[in-house]
View (cartoon, rainbow, N blue to C red):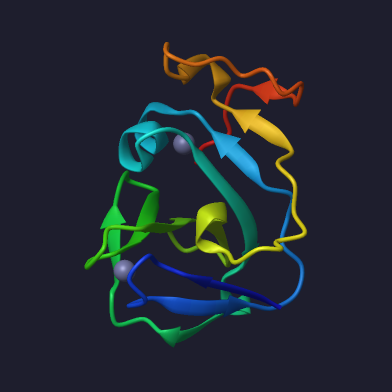
Length: 129
Ligand SMILES: [Zn+2]
Ligand SMILES: [Zn+2]
């Protein structure tokens, strides 16, 4: 079981069971929201159990997905396709050791012009996150 939280503690949760290898998303929306790029691991929505969700808020970022964050401290926490049983958990919200390793760079063509992707992992265009 993994533990996660926002910076201020107004959102605290656990994740039971397996989480998929994390992805990095370099799309414009992820970069603009996160301040750099976005790294997240997908799991089942019902595997995420909240011990505190007082601060949890959702921003409907597009016509098909929403972004979960803490309305007090601003930490980015989740991305989810609307209506999906799956949810992406932001890697930085999880306590170490996560036992997970980044697997792929998505939307590499939309990356910022101020950095390079040089870790040798696959780079793909899409899918949406
Ligand atoms: Zn917070
Ligand atoms: Zn993205």
